[in-house]
Image (cartoon, rainbow over the protein chains, first blue to last red):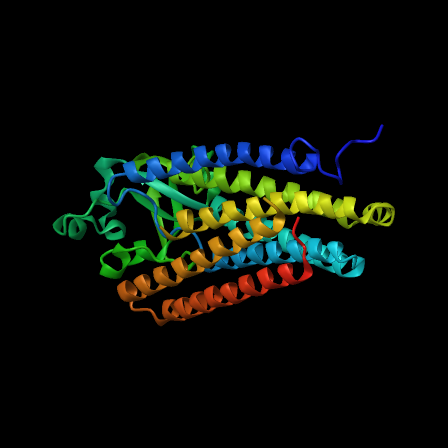
Length: 291
Length: 69
């Protein structure tokens, strides 16, 4: 049975069916992401001054990924326009460029940004042990200046086996630069360019530690929100890429030969979804990386 | 709303983002005194300008080709 109104418009709505369907779907997506963004913004606003992690994400990498997504929106709309003009070869290349942009975005996210966080650890000290690690924390100066004391030392964990092995009595942390020179006033504010952990190793006794966590979703409300929203967004990007691959494969050429307008409508619907996904990122980037 | 119209909305938001990033870079440069952020600001404003030019070109092209779904 033929699905009705895939090309021609329905008399009562004035639109073809898939377009109504995608906009209803996108409306539900707005509610989904809107709820998550609202939760993040309220958590952010409710955090005590100085308590909310800031400057932990790599801004140049995030900017590059943003540019890639914007570029992919341009290529997908050009792919659709090429179909409208019945230029299948141009469509094929624009669609390939869109797929590549999506793949690069996901690659950067999954093989660079996320793993970097899972290898980075934060050691939360017991209040009674803060004085013992003053050389890394610089809390005396911070208290004098009326700033919140530091309770976490972060960096690269050199002996991850210490987390599970009770016979190892201390953690060896390759310190982030801020903890090597904690009294330097420039370290009071966030830095947005990624600086790797130093070779300076701090030995922190387990009995002084309240908890130790990698920079995963379990670390803090900030990282829980970050992984939830970027993970959900990444899943949408993956779904979009998979659909685009289908549109790019020879099976779609058969549809083009049978009815080019039908393929153009399919690409338009997918393009609308892709634009929505990119628009979500336009909000994710400043919220998580900059503010 | 058609893909064409949604694309124009998207380009407007992208332009606003580029302007915002440029402003953010200027603010960080003032606080950190790091010229790399000034370079970032110039690049962001250049991107914003490029997006405006592209948006206008796209709108005119679509009008010219009468792709008005």
